[in-house]
Amino acid sequence: MNLLMVIFGLIAICGVLGIFQSIREKNILALVFNAGAAAIFGWFVIMTLVSQGFPPKLH
Image 1 (cartoon, rainbow, N blue to C red):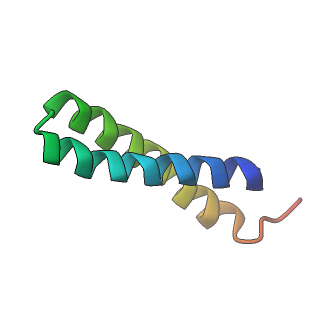
Image 2: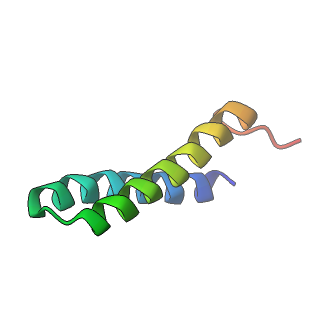
Image 3: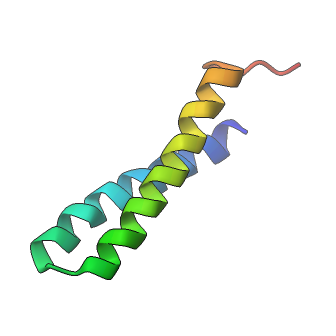
C-alpha cells in the first residue's frame, strides 16, 4: 500500500501542475480533468495517511 500511495501522490502532483498549465493555455476541459484527478488522487493519499499512518501499520 505504501508504494501505491507514493504513485497516487505523484499523480496528484502532476494533476496540480496540469491545472497551472491549462490555466496558462486557457483550456477549460483540461482544467476540469486535471482538477478532478488532483482532487480524487490527493484525497485518497490523505485518507490513507489518516487511516494507516506513516509508516503504515501492517495489521
